[in-house]
Image (cartoon, rainbow, N blue to C red; front, top):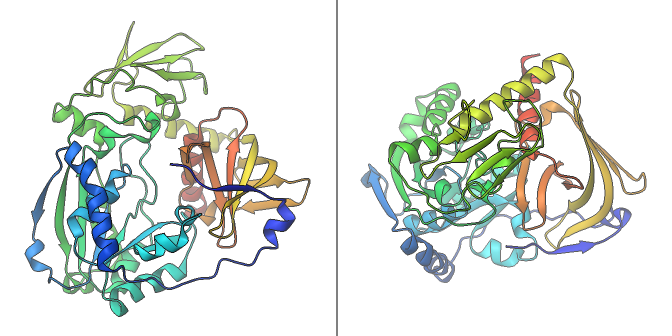
Length: 420
């Protein structure tokens, strides 16, 4: 999938009129059925099944909030299949509207900027649920998982659930990540996909819980490990490309400590600094070709990288400096390519400069609990996105850089800022 881009000078982009807010729409029968039909081929190809629990508690026309884990693009198809024929509003990233705003609004999508405080979104959710009487689908993790485990949930989620005062439904998928992990460059594996759909909380149960209790309950629901699930259920992935791009997640060698010299290719992960080589087995385990394995589990390796970032932050040695190409989003017409710049990330947060000295944007660590970073974003390249409600800045490193490290550092800096 690609996205519309337009080259335009920075001064012209910032002079464009702001993107006007519009309330959500109720998708009609045609668009509901269209989404159902386009979901069928992938669901048939994966032998999709779903186990439901407690769904008899939900009224046929009762609006509800559906929370779903986020592993790959098939998630949306699963949800549209399971929720049909309900009218559904889908909270999605604002860049998904670029070049197709009319269609996205009419199929029920509500745009929001990832990891940016958006009070209008809560108002839109209330309008969709209580005025339009629609169901709302929300992926609270906001971004795909890098290592197959849950990404952080916003602390405001419990408060949002309490404000909305509607039943909460949980959809949890199995196999969606294993079939199409983000790092693997859109190469699909032949893996069966299933889901669990549960009535999680009634309005009465929500009213009797504190925000902190709700957050703990929701965090427990979003606790999973897709690599562990693959191993425990003996899900075989024989594809010869299963380690392609794995260095996007496992970017640092635990044997020599070198960053940015790992390469995932075929079924192997290799450090080109010290020569250490691993195989990613058909069942998702890491095995060293020679000597001991520092890690056999991808999430354990990723967690070690997080601890290394914490150590660098504590020692004051963490810094990211990248020359980047910059795209901007200020409306739904295009991603505006405004030129080159420099992105710095350190203890004080992000600073993006460029466009002949015209652009100078800073973002403090406490601005967001996580970071919008992506691999092979819309087939352009690995990307780091920062910004606010007025504009988003999509930064594409000119030289290879593990954007996963930037996400980890942003999350850890947020925790440090919050603790202070």
